[in-house]
Image 1 (tube, one colour):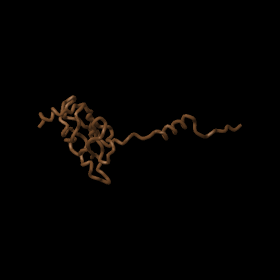
Image 2: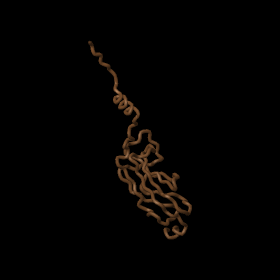
Image 3: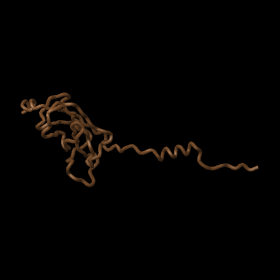
Image 4: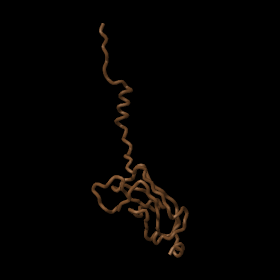
Length: 142
């Protein structure tokens, strides 16, 4: 009697094939470990909002002008996105940023690093804190 061998995929093989086909690749690590920290103002500081001055420290990313159009930006270059209460305020290509005419009140100040093509650096690089903008702080800062 002749034994017939079945050829084909086993269920485990099919499962592994489907798993591999459905898995998306991890985002490319475009930031090479870039980081950003807010140096000033400090957490819970009372600050002037005309203008609001923000100092940061950036490592692992060369800052460039975010408004300069580049068809093929250099890897490892990017800019800072500054947000107030989750709303875009300014973009900057330097560690010092200014936001003109911020109204009095409590604000969440957040900075994030983006690549020169305006995509977020990977892994994520950002920092945030809360500040109080008050007109009284303007007279002491001038």
